[in-house]
Image (cartoon, rainbow, N blue to C red):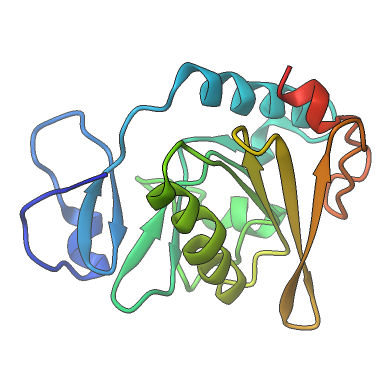
Length: 190
């Protein structure tokens, strides 16, 4: 991750930020962080998940690396999940918007998925920070898809907290949001 040198930004400043490049950023505690390109393996995994989800959800409810979610952090924070499934309400809240950003005053998506990139910094980000941020945002389900560990952790919102269940090998991944999904970690990481 590379931090852009702009100083701390508010969420409103982030929404208006333009630097005349095609670079994408996440806002982490008020700092612009360059959103680096993914490895081809991570892209393949995310596309596999997208096509599996498309069998069970209308296309208009799916987002693939293109929708920002404002979350709570020490300062202004906005994430770009690899995949998300909108609720009808979160999708409707974006109608007519010039930017696909789900702000804190909008309903949250139903599910977000993150494919873990290599390195301890990325592991901490997906397993610790995003876990807390997505929980605080009230997102019903958060998947941590880990190619290195060859496992999928499904975090389900239960009584105000995430309960985590780890799936590995040929064990079918179970989801409350996507109950019809027919996928195992072994197939996903093949």
